[in-house]
Image (cartoon, rainbow, N blue to C red; front, side, top):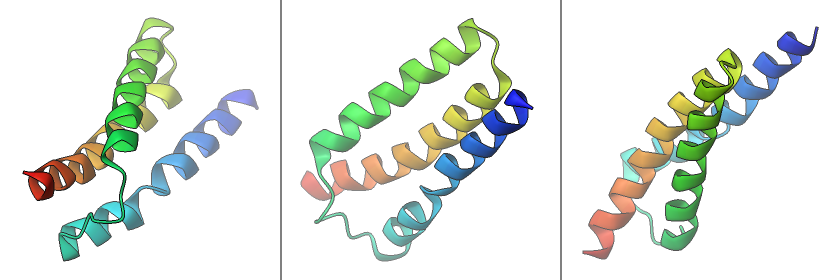
Length: 83
């Protein structure tokens, strides 16, 4: 049962990034997004992924792998807009 809760939590938190990533990809507008927040957040997700791999927690590995991709897309466009 705990594993199911883990998968549900991973799915929902990862899914929450999809609308923002799609919006940024579509509009290329990142003006209202904090660069520092996304740098810190992406670094945190990388550490969560490392931790998930270390303890072999599949929901954590899957969720953070997908979240890294989505957050990195947003971060890429934000960095591109600031250059």
